[in-house]
Length: 516
Image (cartoon, rainbow, N blue to C red):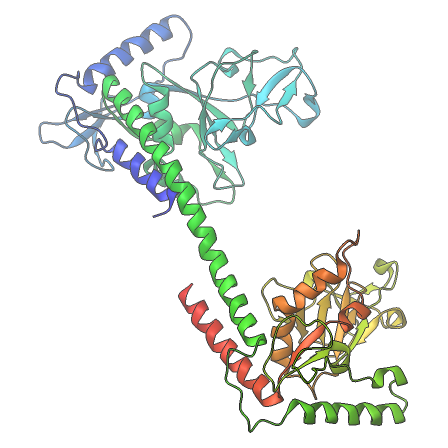
């Protein structure tokens, strides 16, 4: 159960009369209603409130059913949401409160000082925030019922946000005379606990009535809806006991929420950490067994060397690209250069540049002059086209003109892209052809030495990322260039073992995902 669900359960039990025991010495709620009625008559006679000519009265008949008596004297049976204790009463909010809509003012009338105005965004986490207040001129005409008083209940009654509508908070001590905006309503209980009322407005019973009533894109609580809302009313003494018990319970909910949220974080973090651990095992040669029948890495490297020589002779690569860079071991099995960790004897630590071609993208500038909506435009691949945690880039949002190709770099489907700035070092595989800007490094020509999925997983692993971090340490701008990426060490197993590693990784990841 979430903290929100637990809070909702507590409030619902409170409104059903199940949170605290009833005290037989309490006066029945019917007596409280008599006092409320007398107080309303007094306020009417003093001209402080107007008589509601449509006010009704709810009573329980001898048959135990609930009826409503209207102003014209007619009586009608009504359905009530649930059973309440015998000494409680069902009432309409309008029977025990006055309600008013706030001040209407134009945005042009807002100024930096003057009369403070509470708006819907000033209700935060059930409390009133005095940050980001609006102010209107002190010359603004404000009616008596548009001024706020201590213990008023403020409610957001109109918004495009379903979550915001119906949110309430109790007005505390006011340092200066304060009003409230037109998308707000003030609720003033008469001889009823404001705190009890406020908890009622936070209950699922009230929320469900709002949800049933709002079917448009603009969510609102009309004055009619508010006044006609059914509310379970206990005695004043029981209201106080309920409030005290709710507040004790909610303190425990806060403690529970801390533990719950920590557990939720762990639930999110754990699968990622487990996947990273599996990748680390894989890159150490511990995830699958080595097979002596696999074609050796030495044979693979000889094939790479021969292919590079052919490309050199054809003028497709430069002499410097002929280099096959591996970290060799001496007769004592120690490496001639520092390596991240030990790997199986059948593997080799290989410089990344030995296995792939790495180039940086480019950006035609200003880019807005090259963007196009034409069908024959070139896909313009941006980091914004990626989705966190995804392996492939399948779609792009923008295209550029063909005239921009000489100022960027065109790459084909299957090419690896690596972010070189911002969230650097994140790999993706292209599922489309397109042009890349200078925030990308493109990795290609890996097919003869690296399984595509093995390459993705190794670029996603800590062994690579830790090398990236080391290479950019101390830099003011955290960028990866092609030379830095080319210099990292890659653990290279035989091609057939790469395939087995990929299969095992994906089986393991599928099991983890199934548990989430």
